Amino acid sequence: MSELSKDNVADAFGRPLRSLRLSVTDRCNLRCSYCMPEQDYVWLPREDVLTLEDMATLTGYFTDLGVDRVRLTGGEPLLRRGLSGLIRLLRQNPLIKDIALTTNGILLADYAEEFYEAGLHRITVSLDTLRPERFHQLTRRDEHERVLEGIASIARAGFTGLKLDTVAIRGFNDDELVDLIEFGKQVQAEVRFIEYMDVGGANQWSQEKVLSRAAMLAMLTVHYGTIEPLPERGAAPAQRFVLSDGTTFGIIPSTTMPFCATCDRSRVTADGMWYRCLYATTGTDLRKSLRAGASNEEMRSLIRAGWEGRRDRGAEERKALERDGLRVGGLIGIEKLRADPHLEMHARGG
Image (cartoon, rainbow, N blue to C red):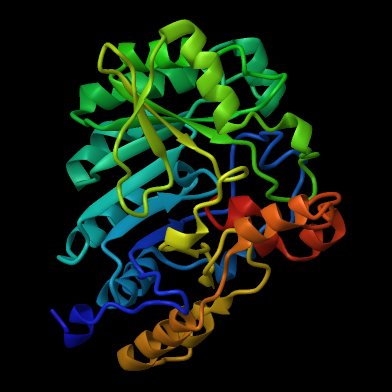
């Protein structure tokens, strides 16, 4: 273990560098209306995409500075060939305590056992509806059955701790909250409801579509009765609750109750751009330095300086604009999104 690993860095507000979301591809096999609503996108040039070995190397620099949790994301990460090889490389790093994967589940039945054997710790599956017709409306694809097959394969492979992420949208799936919790009981998963966030210029986000934490709890209380909050777990984004029968679920209130004050997340895109905030419009090109032959110390110094200078509070800033009546239109204009694929949320791991 290097000396640097004992000296965790903190940003300008004292937030530690603890969690890394590593996007292994910007490609996806769905076109969800809240994330990738367009049929065609400007993709990252393939020659710029990092090798899996490069990704493991970059992750090592982050773990030397305090990161101990890594989440593999996309796009849809299962579209990246050899993903189990990356998991094995990451498992060789003794500073990583947790390796998780977020997936839409379509290809999961083909890979769940392979990922378990490679050493993956946990899986999160995005599941916004239990109704096939709504799934097609949301994603423009008829893959709902394969998602359910993927979810079923997780326990068979040996995984525990499954989470199901649901973006709750008023007027779309707000009548399925109870159904999703009941489905979670069946598959031994904790459901996490995510407030609909303004993450791009093409998704037609509006405040009217946001189903707030308060509204979700009110709806669920009508059905389940008393719902008790659980103690918060540090920088974890989800606020967790328990039903009278012991069932737990979470709500991530990113829009109405931003958690910027405790955010310890970094995001690295498949081509090595590093973003310190989900809402950031500029990042640091780590690939350029890596391929130019920067030394290990130079790479660590680059990341250290970037994090120590971090002042991002993107969700709180968006909330302030709303409060002051200045929040108009999407976060980033569609023309700007098409000019720079890094600005798309699917490129930086959502």
